[in-house]
Image 1 (tube, rainbow, N blue to C red):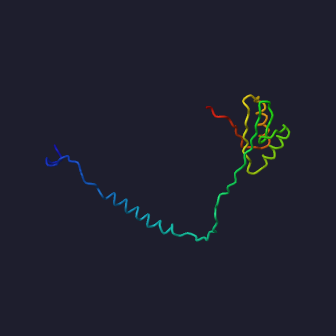
Image 2: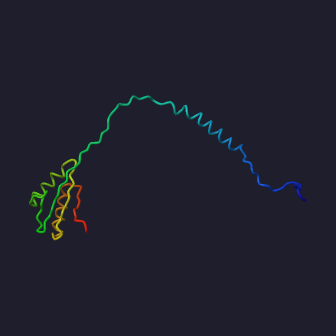
Image 3: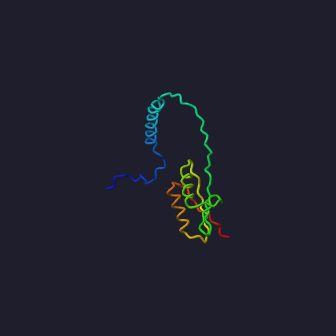
Length: 136
């Protein structure tokens, strides 16, 4: 009991059904036709003209050196512990703040470097860097 005829063969259909593709394209065309006039309605505003040039303000760099004896040097000038705290407070209040570069002798006690860092933090100095010699 076969429902088909002997002439029917199982061949692959090699044509694309264009009807769904045309339907999708027509729907998209209708959507674009409706939305484009809506997008064209806008408020005309006369905006002010201004030039934008970046301000090239580079903060200075302060070198704080600590020699092997634990003596502080502010930009190569010897400075006492009390004067260091005062000078750090002055630099911390500046805008823009200068970069503080700490150069510690390799034989200095870490305590002296930590005291300088703590004083800088209390003074509000945010940019602290350490200067070292490169390994050769």
